[in-house]
Image (tube, rainbow over all chains, first blue to last red; front, side):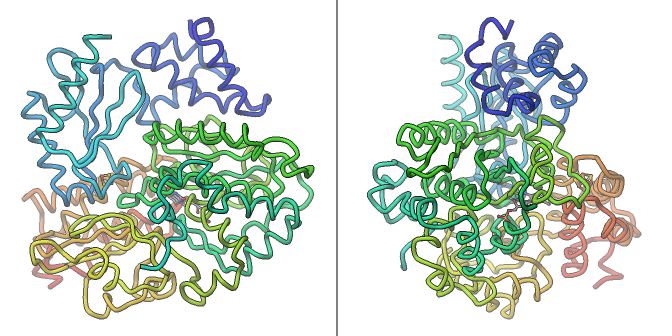
Length: 166
Length: 418
Ligand SMILES: Cc1cc2nc3c(=O)[nH]c(=O)nc-3n(C[C@H](O)[C@H](O)[C@H](O)COP(=O)(O)O)c2cc1C
Ligand code: SF4
Ligand code: FES
């Protein structure tokens, strides 16, 4: 249960908002749930809903609306390549294709070891350092910019190593 | 190079540290405001400076603040750090490298608005950045620069960071407020405007990160100094983002009114590979596309002059494209973006972006039918003026201007439009 395991963190989140507006804590609590369970499970929705005094469908609709929440399990890490217009002008689409080839997946797919899901995403405010991607995992979201296929494969190796040590 | 006012960290290494920032006059503006000026006086200075919102619309900041419903409390200030417009990455540099100037700006705005609580709404992808900001805010609390009785006055302020979760529409101010309230990020019908009924139904000021970073220097150096930079109607410095086909992509702080030519060729190093510059999107994906003629290149980049060209300055995030780029493909790329980001609340935008995507895919996928370009045009025109928020309108602009100004790039339309 989130409420038992992360009591202090939950209190800190709730304290950011006026007590009569607990619902504002929905988004940070969803992040917490996702970090705990890997994706936002049905049980987690219920837990978050109870913490903020909303109903489960309200919380569930947020998961569908915002792209950084996932209601289905994916790879341990989501490698999200920006293929939006400014990055595409600097070769991001070719980069994404080649990286997928190297990883043996299609865009949207997960590597056979279940480690990496590769996705194409919209602008990440790093257009001047394309090709670039972010990695979303249990430890948050981190940027990797000015990438080549080689440097990206190194990032992937590091992720695999990190996860086998975890 | 003249001094940087917003990207001041480029002149002063270590400026992201509180001790360094204070050594260079940091929090002097806030101290002066809180201990010697009334909120109304601060608003007057900001009005006199002519500062216009840097989030895209260019609305005069001081004027916006003065719309707050009188005598209704509590009030809130929200900093818009959602920065999601394709081609825009200026707020991120300010937040990462010059965070205290931004936070001091938030505090000044909050004092002027008589708000005791301010939120910084960061796009979810700024996860690392948001955590750093939280630690900077904690430093301010520890230093007594946030909290109760600021500078010995009765004024109290706290700042909190709120992370979004991946939705461009949350940059639109009323969608942002919904999101901050824990709801779907869908725009509200206006009026009421946030200055009357904003966060939790209370009077609220929402400003862009760059707008807020302008406030400390305006207060310490004065409105007349500020007006000495830029043009009469568009005063002050601006951070311009350069992306796409440009030798030196990145942020450039220059006076509003700098010409396209100076920005692109003198500062940005021109188009790589000796290619010809074909098109400019001055306001990210939300642009009317400009064909890069000499007349365009010699136009000063201020709000009025770019509008007079049939485009808009917006957030001043220039996407540059050389002569290899097919504008039908550009229309497809921007449509993919807007289709993905449409919040689905109103029919013209939800359905219109869907149909525009189908048509632009057909037009660029080798399966175009003779009537497709005209159909695309009619879908886009049919959306204009009918959408609940500006996203729907934005989505049509690259499409209609690509058709109108680069008709030859649309295969099936070439016969009719050329
Ligand atoms: C679809 C859409 C997206 C927007 N995205 C942003 C954004 O990412 N950042 C921002 O500051 N303003 C954005 N805006 C503008 C805001 O609605 C608002 O005008 C701005 O934050 C006001 O601040 P300013 O007066 O300081 O510019 C967006 C507007 C629309 C319609
Ligand atoms: S115009 Fe689009 S983004 Fe705006 S409210 Fe309508 S559906 Fe949502
Ligand atoms: S377009 Fe890729 S980060 Fe902006």
